[in-house]
Length: 314
Image (cartoon, rainbow, N blue to C red; front, side, top):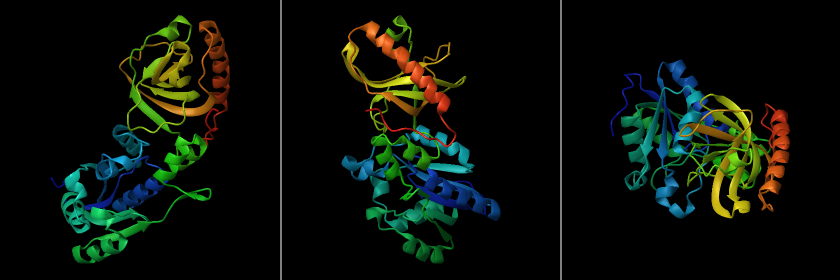
């Protein structure tokens, strides 16, 4: 492990998985950046890749709110000086809490002050806790600051709570806890171009295997493209009218002309329109898509800055 070159003042550090970079995470990150500025030190986030449970207990590993690249994108607005992505493997999982503090946080991350969330546990068997950290801090000369829980309504913000909301189609709750709409990023691929033949050309994206999506259906969406944000509607799931059982993301952009093949885009779920169903032929499908477009445009126009989002299609 190569130490970060932080200079003699060292770093104000936090550590964790930070899946979702939600409001609770942002409270911790705000604390380290503020403390680092006040102390003339650098703010350092140590995060793990992949999710520790994918190594320790793969059967229990959750689908991710943010892939590795999405997490870095979300962290870009947090004004951190350093983000250290630590490969989590069997050797990392075997580190005792004391070893982790000494080898990773002190030697590698140059820690002089540690900021953690209220429920943080670490090290082999998750034995490390606040009490151990404060005991080690007294020995090794670092301070420990604990950031209290952040609440949304009557529920504590956590990655687990957000995953539950997304999986259940409660995107309003997920958005409030994330501080932004749930989204997925990916590269546009060339599909079978059936949409062009009926007047609704689509962007096609594969679904990351470890990404958590809301329930399948037809959705109004906002899409961040290399040339700006564009509204649209998306079919998420299979295509029964064409007897295609593959699970896909197909997005029709409104008022857009351009070639995005091979480009990276980010899709935000805004509002549900309907469930996926089979139609008796292309004409019936085209008529439904025309109705979907009217509803999607209305939903996008009504989308509010406080990230209100209806539940999933039934």
